[in-house]
Image (tube, rainbow over all chains, first blue to last red; front, side, top):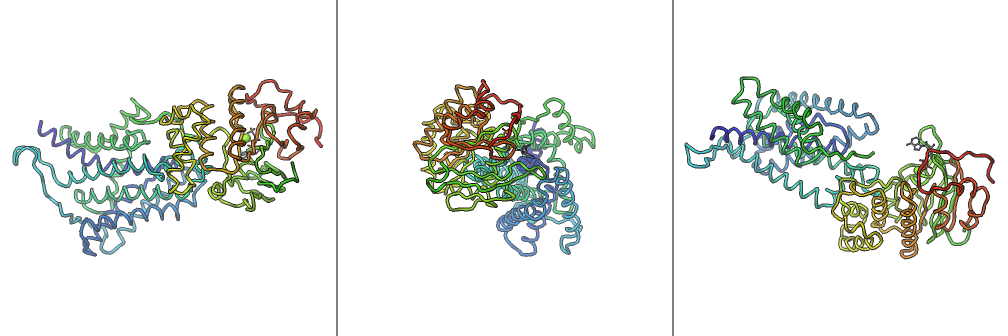
Length: 296
Length: 262
Ligand SMILES: Nc1ncnc2c1ncn2[C@@H]1O[C@H](COP(=O)(O)OP(=O)(O)OP(=O)(O)O)[C@@H](O)[C@H]1O
Ligand SMILES: [Mg+2]
């Protein structure tokens, strides 16, 4: 029983990472009806930025964290403005190829940067290798602080995002723009700027995911491949909503964790895709898929 | 009423096209402040194109568009909304997953954030025109009926505090009874708020009944214009536009042009 709980908690922690990246996918998908396959690579860049801020610049963790998130938001907005906006009007396929290309480019460039290179780095977070015992030391549930931080940070971030989309004018305008772009133009909403901000937000969320994940997986050029598991999370959640991304991420994370322990070697890596296949057969629109078709 | 007061909106020889397809050719029209002007035309005549060109969604190839003292051509749609000219698009175009209230808030997007209290009050004011919307305040707009969505679309535009509204076929898909109701409220908005209206319609019956002045558009050209009272008496209008019995039902038909106008 304790074993099971243990697996669920660590699965949930990784699931939170999937959920955050999935959220990045969903935001951009809803705004532009295309998928940004460089999402995981954005996460990797955040890992390196955080690493550099802490080790090279010697900044404290919280400051490095904040600066990285700001830099990631700017990077997202800049990518939209300079690389993707000129593609406006092209078929979605062009756009997807462009993001895949950008991902390759990012992984390649990172290995050329002297300190970053092809090596694996460890992000020196203050809570590294600490654990907390629930229900008595040595016999209760042991949770690593790294996992706990991921879960708490995700809960806080998702709550903030929920409030943002629900109650702020910009948040509602982002939803409006992704539901009916033409109508947003008619209302005088600055659609292009809103889309750029969505890219910034999505990239910043990936930044958070990258910094939360870095203490566990280390920082390296291929760190972004977890994005491949976040994509199934988005699909399971219905590719459309914040709760969907969160639940989808948690399901994938937990199933993976359980499969890794109870099933033979190798099942862990395919668990995410098995879940997606089952989902697509049972409920093609995903758990939270909306049936209202989008206009425009 | 062409020459009398200084027009609030003036189109001069406006041409617009979609790629190689020329949709409107040399359209000129004037709208006097405080009036209701209608543009009648059948499917594909170019009515929507005229409105999109005015509201900055399309850029004209030629001609000028003057709203009060500002040139509108080449301007950004958001800028045009801020000047007080708002477009109620064809087919409602609401935000389906946002609630009724959130849709209305988006109508007020161009107003300063400091207007928050005024916007809340204005929402109550538009509910006075369409009480059914008040009951649905927190319901997703996609769940409203077509008629209710039209009401929402008009209300949303009102939230921008327009001095002039462009209405694209408000009767589209509505029953004759609801069409009359909507037009009566449109007239009230015009009288009570002094909002100038440019309404494009296929339903000539209703448009000529409520508007002051009318233009007839055929394949991208204005072929006739006069006061609505005078238009109602013209044989061509009677034959081609008022001859239809059922009102408000959209049909794929094109009016055959049997003789040249003018
Ligand atoms: N997006 C577009 N791309 C290409 N051609 C278009 C486009 N929109 C309209 N057209 C063409 O421009 C012409 C005028 O269209 P418009 O939509 O202005 O007509 P309308 O009078 O509003 O018709 P309806 O009553 O059916 O709404 C038509 O010939 C139409 O085929
Ligand atoms: Mg039209």
